[in-house]
Image (tube, rainbow, N blue to C red; front, side, top):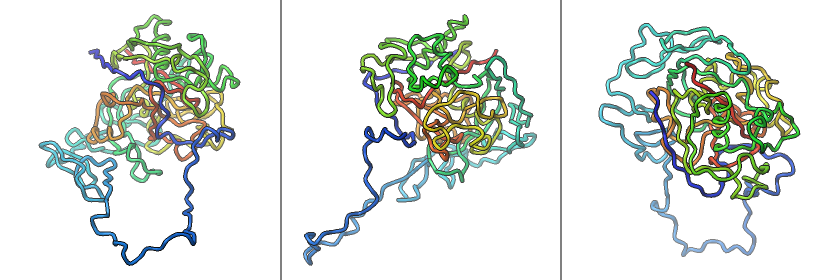
Length: 414
């Protein structure tokens, strides 16, 4: 059954990226605010010491700042203030998650995947194996043709491991996800050459890298526009309805630091609303965040699917630029550059605590119903190696452009 999701988006100006970490290349420091140093300035002789009349602080002067992190219930570990309550029929666990009251796991007959009673994960598969919809471990096979790889339906655990560093509550709790539809995914990110075949303006900052390098500098609206354009070229239905759009797709050249640098705000392509026809749409589309991580992991439960130097372009090895796609090692399903080179847009709105709503499992999640930023995944040439991991989540405003983000499309298989 096909369903639609309509999002209404403000037409205000671009906003800078949020919570996407990375050092800037040399020469860009002039555009960056200088952070305060860690050195305290000692008092001078002119400083006046406290007198006997100074009033010492009382207990009421101490303010505790609550920090729930990914907890949705019970007390927070800092102030012991409530992080929320569980709905009727559920109880709060020691790690602040809700689960069915009196739940007893039942993993009988399952090698992997969530148990049908409590949603607890029943077990992991060996290397190069994945969990199918029946809860069995199956060998992963590369099935890639003409730049597209088949990703079979299955189950996996989404999010960061408990001991994965650096800690970020937005990547937790790790939770079971079921992907019920097989889909094909581009083996690499969309290249500048592929973009130029459908769009007259190439916004990429790294044009000198060439046609085999990823297109970047596009915003989320331009990403869904391109998906529709490819569907139309191949005679497939559009997966998105774009309404009240303005500006020119791909116009202007984004800078390394400023949103839409060199592009008047009125020329930035944006739409008042975007309606998604749903996962049964036969055309090309952006992956959901869950589909992206499922495909990128290709069965692995580790932070990465291989040695980072072998699989990804990141800040420490990229020379501060993009590189031709497909030059690094593939994952078990044949996908290349899912980590590093450029970030990749997903369909989903960013929800910092969204994973908590899936603590006992989700099936084909589409993310929050609304938001301000769209999810980006995978890390990029400007991102330091510790943050180029499968669980790391970033986000940009949908009309924001930056030279470290591109796209990789998917298509639901019949």
